Amino acid sequence: MTAASPLTWLYAPGDRPEVVVKALHAGADVVVVDLEDAVAPDRKEYARAATAELLADPWPLPVHVRVNALDGPLAEADLRAVAALPGVAGLRLPKVTSRAEVIRVAERAAPADGGAPALHALVESALGLEHAFAIATAHPALRGISLGEADLRADLGVREETGLDWARSRLVVAARAAGLPPPAQSVHPDIRDLAGLTASCARGRALGFLGRAAIHPRQLPVIERAYLPTSAEIEEAEEITEAAATDAGALALADGRFVDRAVVEGAQRTLALARRK
Image (cartoon, rainbow, N blue to C red; front, side, top):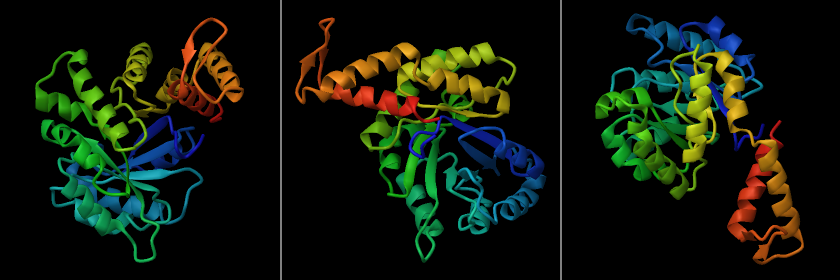
């Protein structure tokens, strides 16, 4: 794994620290401790305190915390409790609708000595989607954006899976235009439907996503297999990079395919992803 290309983001509920510890040993690239949707209202304070205790020291892999909605009464207490902890590598901000929200959190979370956690914005509404590029460029501390598809589906009244494809593409374009990594897909909510997860990952990969959030460890190997390059893709990428090593300009491969700098850069990304483990 490289810090720039995590493929699996495993959510764990903040009010169940024993589950968080299991998640930290489940093989995910990033663990996300959830203080928001996964925690009942009467467990919010306990979840915050338990998370602060668990993340008081660093862990050997990145741990992010999803705080509560920024326009609600709990987010400020969440940020005070966890933003500066040694074990917190990032903050996931739910239901972001404007750049101002990102800037406010970035300024609030920045410690006096630097080392602020990375911010990741979750776009979960029509308004947020309309402001996707503004959100993506709001602050240098913002390192990624992604969709929260359950809330977005409800906001848009979308029933069919394909009804979100435009929104997905819109977010991919906003992320890349802002110079951010390709976004990770939203969670697949049925933890038993691994065939459906595989098919959904393939579609997400075709749309330009990279990796996916998960809610159960059994989803992790499926996501990783779906997003790692195939042997055929690796072979093609090696052919392209070897040809480019002898010719700095545009060139044609032995089979007649024309290759330019953009294709070479894509091949280099493929090989870097293949070497992540």
